Length: 121
Image (spheres, rainbow, N blue to C red):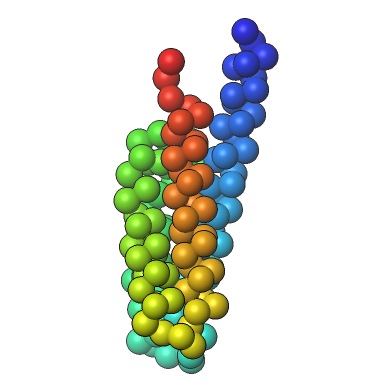
């Protein structure tokens, strides 16, 4: 029985780190995407505003707070919608939007997988 607990802890730890990494990658992608057309005060403010929902759950991710993982799934949905909308509406930005769409989907799956792996029995 202790091996399954140890195994689930290591799985949860791996999922926690992958969630943190995917969240950081999505933040970096949105920042680069927003600032790729030039650096200005307005663009920097827009980049900060666009990434704000991704900064909010980081403290809870580090602490492995299950409630944070649950509500953070709602923070990922706008980036999925952004990537989907931009891939349809802006043919020149399909590389950025495809990457945003993929990272948002991977982050969403990682969050749900963490919640399933750490649910109380």
